[in-house]
Amino acid sequence: MNGSARGMDMKNKAIAAVITMALTSCVGTEVPASKMAEVRDIADVADGRWTATAEGRSGVDRAWVKRFRDARLEQLVEEAMLRNADMRVAAEKVKQARQAAHLAGASSRVLASAGLSGDRRKINFIGLPFAGSTTDSTYGLSFDVNWEPDVWGRVGAGVSAAVADAQAVELEMRAAKASLVANLCRAWFALCEANEQVVLAEQAHAIRVKTLESVRDRFELTVDDIGAAAAELRIAKTDIATSLAHKAQRQGDVEAAKRQVELLVGRYPSARIDGKLKLPAMPDTPPVGLPSELLLRRPDILAAERRYAATGMRIKEAKLAIFPVFSLTGSAGTSTDSLTSILDSQFGVWSIGSNITQSILTGGKVKDELARRSSVDRQALAQLQSTVLNAFGEVESALAVDKWLALRVAETVKAWKLAGEAAQSSEEEFNFGNVNLVTVLAAQNRKIDIASQVVLLKRLQLENRVNLHLALGGEFKIQKGVK
Image (cartoon, rainbow, N blue to C red):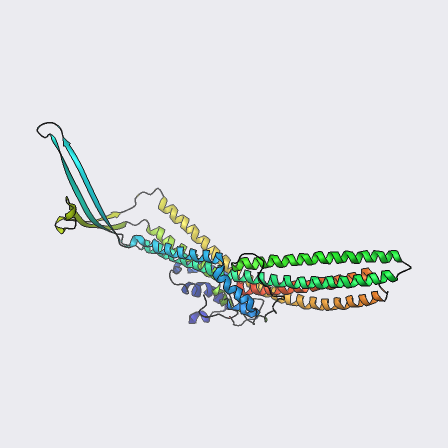
């Protein structure tokens, strides 16, 4: 960013992020100066600072994956970049867009063609004094040149628009890569959580088995109220079956999560991928003061800006369509009645010509096309504004959710410890005959449910951190040379 932009307040920096750096960071077409005032309307949709954090500086890309300290996840991310079919589709789209930009300027380049022709004919003469026939042959070799000089810049405007579109497609591929990494991280964390939930389900089943043994012992010792003891025994057996069903459900979740990870990586969904048993530890809290300039790395914002730049050049192209079109043609070659003499310069022929084409009556076609492109231009501006606003909203939401999830996890962990103490106490009281089985099972269920909630909340914490990195465009600091 230039010196004057650095002196702006945070609100103007948000504008500069879209106008100055975003526009000048892309090679090729720039938004025309006449449209800058319209772009400044972006300031109306954001106040220029993250209200969920204090003001400061920091920075971001794919390096953020390392913050989870999970080597296996990092390996899968690299594999997905190479094997995911959607990434190959996106790469081919970039190639096609680049070729389209190259083809857009074809009419302004000199076009040449060569040709070889041959003609043989017979003429019959009927009646005197010319009765009879004659046969003659003609052979020709030609080299033709055609050039349409871009006098008014119409073709150049079309080329610039195509270049901007190609840049937008490439940025959209970068956005697809970022989305793939985020989705893979989420799927991996879902697999880790599913594994932890299976362990919890196994622990819950073990608790039910232990409780059943205690109930059976009481049933065998009971002589006064044998009916109540028998009912408790049935309830304990019911809970055993329920815990096994819950365990089977969790195991099914593991297989589904494995297949999702495999699909994202580009493997066949065989559910054979190895997953970590536990969720990775939550990374450190985001640093204080995330500047809005970080959004410059977001490829969706840059792509929207490139689309907007392209529409401006297409308006220029439409306006210049009313001007005359110049074309120059030239032809050189030979024409002879002998094939063996076709390369002989003595039989050479040539021609040079030029023409000017001026549209006079077009049935309103030029005017209507200009109106259509102007509408597309306004649509692109609105899309750019919407993209910037959504980016601010995504960052604000992720930062706010990060704080509240941390509080929920802390309080739920406290509740889980208290529930564990209550469950242990109720089991001891049950063994002494001071409480009934319903009280024990209620305490155990509370402990099991809260333990499951803790694991779920930790996974949601990790996913929200992924969302924050995706919203910011990468790490908490700008990584130089990252594409």
